[in-house]
Image (cartoon, rainbow, N blue to C red):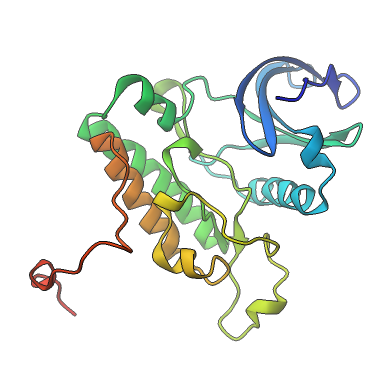
Length: 238
């Protein structure tokens, strides 16, 4: 884990302990002196800061979040750079992620799981109406807060949906420089085949896989490799 910055934005933030870490960035608990409140400060790791692709993807996340205002999407407070390392300040959610809740407490009650999924779907609806596909919905990207608050985060590999008559290969969407992104066990088959050629349906698939994980505490089944049993489709109507 990279050492934390002593400050960011000319001392606006006082940075404390890390609360999460990934391959690209580390999230710290921080105090925002300007807003007089605690926040979550996502700071790019030093190695990632030297990658133009990762920097662009990081800024894409900030752009996506700044464009969305919804009670079930984590809001951005500020975006900046400190000695070459990009950062995003976001609302601090005290309950951690739904993924962490699963690890600590196991399967959730059905009513709690359904409440979480319903709230995330409301946030996804707002994103989809704005033409943004998240592409990485999973329990680890669902944050929990006080008063049963639920908010979707991590739009780092989101992309802008393009009209059907536009050339996908020439897109200038939120993310076009990638190979296969996302978490494989929550990924729809079409996203595995070509992560650029997806629409909002891939988020709905991931939401179903997330509900399965929340209720059962198990990894979602790989439906793209599951045997097809015709009797399972008897009740499906055109």
